[in-house]
Amino acid sequence: MAVTALYSAHYRSLVRLAVLLVRDMATAEEVVQDAFVAIHGAWRRLRDPDKALAYLRQSVVNRSRSVLRHRAVVEKYAPKGLPDAPSAEHGAIGELERGAVIEALRNLPTRQREALVLRYYGDLSEAEIAHAMGISKGAVKSHTARGMAALRNVLEQSS
Image (tube, rainbow, N blue to C red; front, top):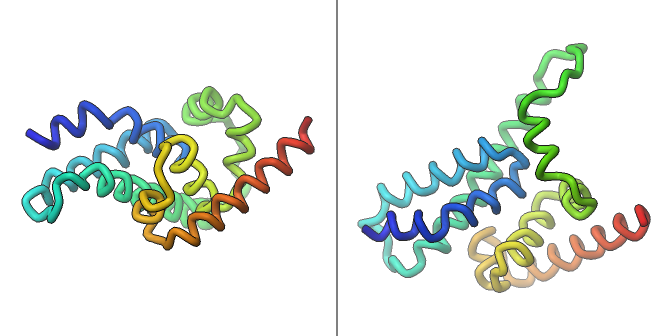
């Protein structure tokens, strides 16, 4: 089946993409699994099955955005004054965030981070990034340029 072939070929790279966006391995795996479940259910309705990978990428990006929005709401309404205790998630994320580049990437605005991850990690073209993010190619260029400038600035200051 085509979905199984897509899963075998692209699951790991989609999880890595999601980890860079949501900064949590377990959540990233859940996001990607949900995207595969959705494409499996919608397979008959796909107009062009050759674009299934692009659909999956867009689904992963959109689902990652939803996770981040949900986190923001939860954090906003979390009880104040609880002691800060490192969680198991924190330890797992720490393994992923060792480099200065990853740390700088985390502090970028969401759209800039998404554009840079899709461009330099996912090795997607501007057109593919625009499709995955649901924006124009010009906006992709703008987010990428601004993100690179911000990264360069942060990394030069930390050196």
